[in-house]
Image 1: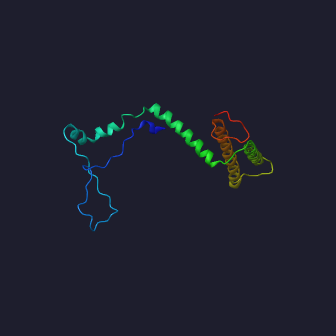
Image 2 (image 1 turned 135 degrees about the vertical axis):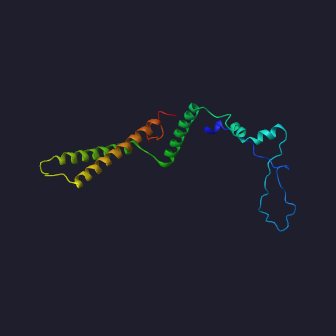
Image 3 (image 1 turned 180 degrees about the vertical axis):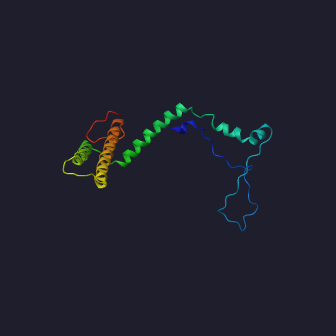
Length: 170
């Protein structure tokens, strides 16, 4: 969508003034393309061509302001995300999302059980191994929770259609 702000330029047409034609093709490679020469410019146009900053500024005549750019960038990101999600996720059903939610509940339960286990009277001291296991359980639960939140957001935005569920988005 951001391409709407750039000017399209017509391709340069070959002509007698902007090509160097070989005088003889004998002994030359036929796959070699002749060099293009810049067109001859005379008068006031020569001064304009001498200043490259003028040409550079002409490129930005149709440039958007930052608000327009950010608006179209957000739209592009939504379109790209929706297209990539549809190509990466073959199908998604409510049952699969519920399985992820149940997996998250199990991981959180295991993490809390390990925390409570650290406080039990059976233990005399806490070692690095115990803390490592606790950290791993917490990280696993947090990662699955982030994944479930990403699924929910994708469903809410309409990026991930659910099979068997009517979409609110056209």
